[in-house]
Length: 144
Image (cartoon, rainbow, N blue to C red; front, side):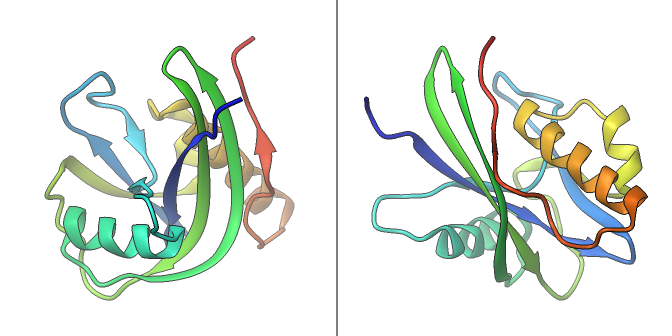
């Protein structure tokens, strides 16, 4: 079996809110996601996130610990999405997205999010409701 494409996504929390970005263009136009992107050959997830945050928002990101991963299977192939805590100073300016939003974790369930991101969002909301502060655990999701 071939190796999955690896994508890094950042979980940025400030004041109890989480940063999400709305995609612009392509098949996922208008969907909300945790910011990030494809990990290039020879690049670490942390390096990919730092690069993506600079390109997409014009900020210098500090990438923290891995908080979870989701592997999905789709008609386009397998994808491993690795989520890391991310911090940065300043206000993110959307360069490649139509907008950004600081949302409460409980608000994410009502947003039109990409599938894997919706799973992580649900875990974040559950952890806040239950009083747990650590990030999501690794999991797998796939086609039925």
